[in-house]
Length: 319
Image: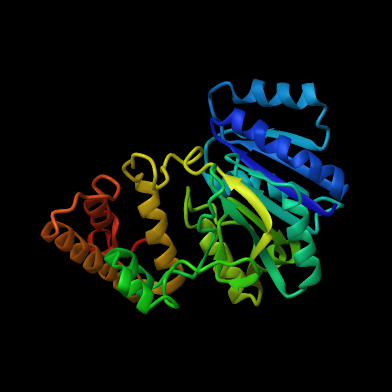
């Protein structure tokens, strides 16, 4: 098998079907490609709708795998990956694809071509666009105290001054090596799993792809942004956190817990505390600035308070 694509569903069956429709031309182009859709115990009409679509369209290149519980993003994707890696015909590559994303023509094959041509590259991610065709952030630097301070401050001239230290890369039209790519559309070489294992099930949602890319980097593999591969991501349709153009919702507690886990697990207590203090200091400064300027609050509801109560400052260092 050349590539396995894993799509994890949780109460978005219509989006899953649209995602699968976008993959059909890639199945025909690549040939040795299989798709597995896992379902994290949605408890709605996902199972009959997805099974019905597979039967009606005769998509025999897709396997549907209902799971017994909602164990989160890593759990659901690992359940789809594990049996194929352990089979007699393991895939050369595994692609994670969100149900609220669909690939444009050549989106899968472009990632394969890049990885085939760059043996030291372990991970590749697509150029991601929103529903209006605008490019969105899809490749990033690893988080640290500096990126957290800049995220908290939200000051344009400071971002420009420290553009090489920001979380977000300035992405162009050429491939580039990056620290990590979004898990919404990410292709992974089989040998990376051989070296570092599967995704960490202890993350419910968010930061699991950052953790995975960091583990891969420490094992000697690089990650790359490949703009020839294009995917449209209808952000927030599967996660509940809205994009910047919509009314923002309060962040779920598992976002903060995942962030805290990432820093403690990968950087230790001191670095985790410094990262928390950097963001709190920067975000507090941002609040003061907005108040002086009499400008309205434009971040998710209760974000400052939620961040503090889930941080190492309030919760300590226990994973």
